Length: 394
Image 1 (tube, rainbow, N blue to C red):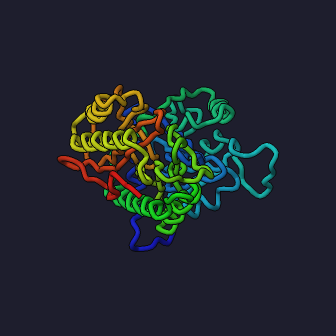
Image 2 (image 1 turned 45 degrees about the vertical axis):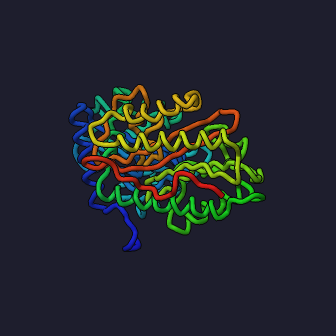
Image 3 (image 1 turned 135 degrees about the vertical axis):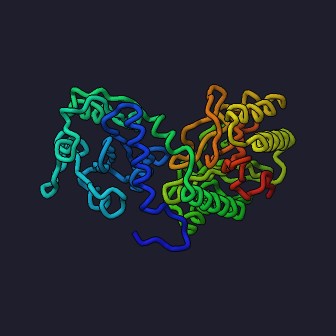
């Protein structure tokens, strides 16, 4: 594809490096093949196809086959093959029978079953014993059953976590792309602040955010843009409505643009007038918790130790029951991808991980908030990727 020269992208040369890393994983786990499933669910469905093939899945599911030796193959539905050959980084594209619709006819497509494709490209399906499966949690029961029936002698080994681990430390090109995603996220917040005023609806503000980010070059969002006001801020996963923002209101913003398959996430609470001392106190606590976590970011530290610092500050302020989920997670081809650094996780921070510190307070009597920023772990600390101020008043 022709790319604008001034915009960061992943070079085609990077994908064979990723395939070799997967093949090393297969050898280490004594696996014959990786089957990586992807679909078009915006939050996490596209991850494997995007990382292995730079293919933005749409409408039909996709599987990437990576053999222990040789080149990968992309399996698609019968309406995706031409786009996969045009857009993806894997030249061998096959139409998979298991991805066809039973009521639809495709008389001019060459459609093959999984066993037929493997017999053609190798390895011989009769020699397969252990196959690694990534994306199993996304697969429908029918699709999984069809794969198992196509290879009845195979042991299917779930290696989702291991494949995600390969993505944890970002390459220089990935860092550049994610940095651009955060620049665009900042632009989205700026557009929101221009649109937020008494009388504006939540959806009008959301439209301003997404228009600004689209103009800046995003392809979509990792999660739906959240603009919630007043009592609508209370749940973790608020959705924008036609509610009108009022004077002395609070407005929760969460923007998560997807640029070239990679994500950023910024969360803020905007004070419209004076929503009261209780809200202001909670916001101050959240900002202090965010800062305390950021000060601890460095390679070699367990992520849960960082998260604990923020959780402790929120708890000491009497708001601990509002800290409802893990406050530290990775960012990449999923907006919140493994590793997730909650209290039960022993995962350690490493250089060139992209980390989101997300301080939540939800399900309270006054509503809810999140303060969320992104950081790149450096050799001796962390680089903040966000320039939006912590406290915003309109």
